[in-house]
Length: 206
Image 1 (spheres, rainbow, N blue to C red):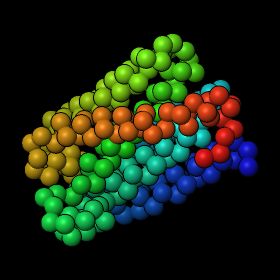
Image 2: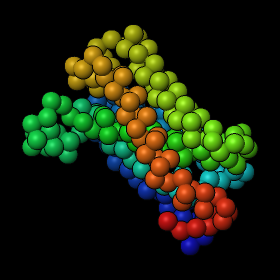
Image 3: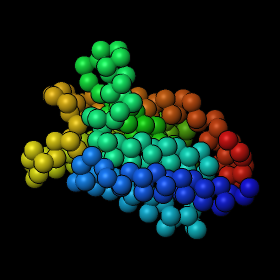
């Protein structure tokens, strides 16, 4: 299987989950707010593809991230059924799908940013690479929290499901902490594999 076929499969899987998520979501307006940023990002990646294809690892992590977002958009993050079951089974204080999603919000963008930095030679010293990648992920997470903040100012109670705070006044801080954890984990777990894929011209199988 060549690179383009594999990437097409990733795209088709994402499209199937996207279509499923759009069918009778719990709250249509919340679904739109949740999935819009991800679909815009995917459209940008498709536009970039002929001139700047990314590694399999990067696309796979972005696919996983997108699926997490589409599922959250369909059910809302506070009502994801599996995590409701986990909450009830372990007598937790909330549905933690939102926290999980924000870990992935750090996990996938970290490798994406890392690839851009390396291949575009934006960061030439590897000692600074991990630090700047984490900074980008935190900036992205903070920007998303600002989007939620402005949505709340404009939409009021209508966007409560989009915010998904579940009564926690520290929810934005926890969300950014989870993204930080995801970014650090991503660099620790995937950096060597990522380097091999870039060095081998994106031909290594996962």
